[in-house]
Length: 306
Ligand SMILES: [Zn+2]
Ligand SMILES: [Zn+2]
Image 1 (tube, rainbow, N blue to C red):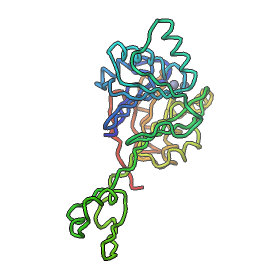
Image 2 (spheres, rainbow, N blue to C red):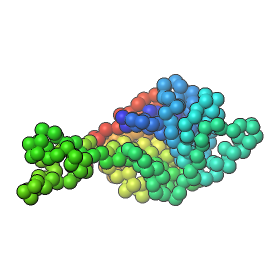
Image 3 (cartoon, protein in one colour):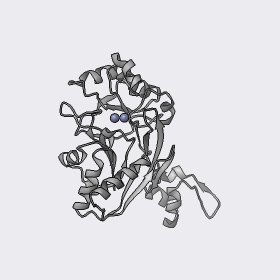
Image 4 (tube, rainbow, N blue to C red):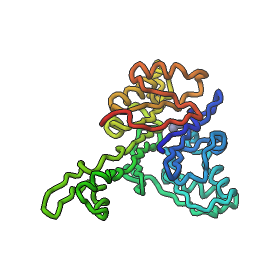
């Protein structure tokens, strides 16, 4: 399982039934919450995402539309008797903000809450099955994107073939990691004779709120799914630049230059009632585009052979 559920897709102000930014990346054994705009916990309930499976929360920046839902969610987790640890990866100042909120309300979380300030860039999570990197994006205040990468899976041993070379089962683990087998007589059995490749690791990149920035191209090159904001339609390019946001066309250009598998665009400005034109404009440049419609769940697949 490697799937993205959209919980909020709007920028700044909730409008036309759209909520501020939040997404959940679901893996086999945990959920990662990415940004937590106001209303996120209601959206989790509405779209049946288990909050108990959320192990880590990533906050891209401290504009309210990306974290105003956080204290509510954290408090509810405590009220619901959460016991397992929760990790928050966020700009350093958020730790003080949370402490002020908790102190003023006399709240202490009874579950272990670990705060990890974001470094400039680099690996921030390295655990079984997955790695997460953060990278800076260009916005009015410090802002980060996140790159989620599945870990390389071991190769699969084909027992019938391994058996035909009399390879002892004790050696299978080494076969899984690509080692060739050498028989007692010194004959080499090439690894790919007796194993098959596992599915290549999948990757998802979340580019938060950002100006059009070609520096992102190398960072997100070839990912299976790219989320890039598209706050405005293409005729608002000047306004987008002024406010450190991007347009449909700019999001699609990043996707195209980076040769990603699929693009999802969101963070729609509250001034637009209808968002279909966003899809029309982006698709002209990058056909495999979809809108971040709340409630959709995107199964992240390898769309291309890389
Ligand atoms: Zn925003
Ligand atoms: Zn912002």
